[in-house]
Image (tube, helix red, strand yellow):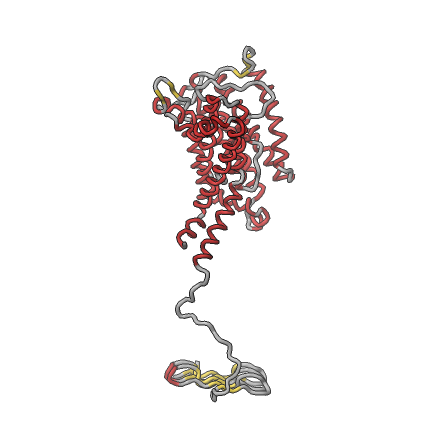
Length: 457
């Protein structure tokens, strides 16, 4: 039981179990909806959503492709949460980064092939950082609620991107952006050959490596650097951080700048892939930005956990798409995925329940704590009728005399003056090389003489 308590009480295990419980509860409710929708094929369809991307290599490659942008937006939300901020503006930052990447991919065709896509990623990072900087400055300098500022900037970003597309990189035939140059497409690094089933290839590309790289980098920044410590300290208690000498305004602004940069890179990774994705000019917010919120919650704001939670959400999306083979309408599939995502938000609640379970198991295993060796309970002594060496003066209610065996090298006599209530005399066995005499003046209550064996000091 002690071992079970230690395992359940550990940070990593409680995080893992809380996320798993949330996922299982969401899936069970999804199964209930399938039963009400089409009971005859419910279990077959549920099996498909569980298998998801593990059906074959091509499907798993599509999972990696779908996971890439939401891992980045999940990292964006999680990083801001570590500083005590709720970055609900990842959608606008995602759109700004996507537009910047496409603009570089279409217009900067003179760049060398190996640098074109890198410059496009850097442009997306810069655009997202600038868009995230705005609510950060408003929060740090004017205490404007970052949730309100981010929501407004989501819509401003959406309309601004639509306008910029129409005047710079617009394809009027399809009401969307122009196709990017081949040199701006993300390299596949051989993933198209690895994740392939027969003649069917997947959409996997090098973007997943970029997402994993940023996940590891953010983990190192938060857990292994002074800058990360300052950000987390500001998130735990902004006033205490400021009192400790941490510039909390700088932490707030930098947190939103980095969060915006991460979301911007997510937009670039989606539209620089070789799948032909383009930004449609329509008044719809980027869904990937909002999907990053449950991804961060399911990963409990841990950058490494976000990588796995983003992959899981993508796995469910691929499985949900395949459920259409069992005549389930797309609306039912979206409902099931939304419920699973909704219950992922309860990961923090589940974490608290797991920790309480660990404490309960520990208290059951050890109802009574054993007494440490060498320590014994002290029983109260009310009277000393048989002790001739311990006397209490009735006037001062103090011990006027205590004598201890001289062989013990301990105190042999202690007398307390009734006027000063102080110890006027302490004698210690001379064999112990300790104090042999201390005299205290009864009027001043100060030590007037101290004698050690071998002379005064």
